[in-house]
Length: 63
Image (cartoon, rainbow, N blue to C red; front, side, top):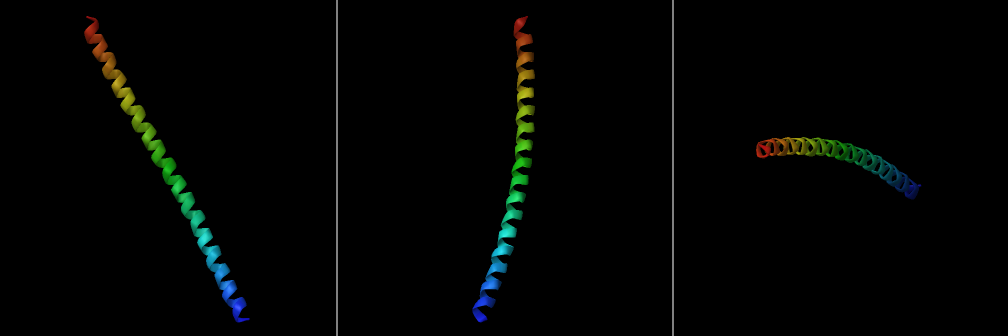
């Protein structure tokens, strides 16, 4: 009975930590996705700025 009690509490602990790890993984995934989107937006903005600068420079040198 004692052994069974220890086993069941261990099982509960494992189940809780497993549940926690799934939640943590989901949070990490969500955070990474958010960071990824922010990075893409930033890169896109930088490229847009760079290309418009390049266009302006080209316009200046064309004359």
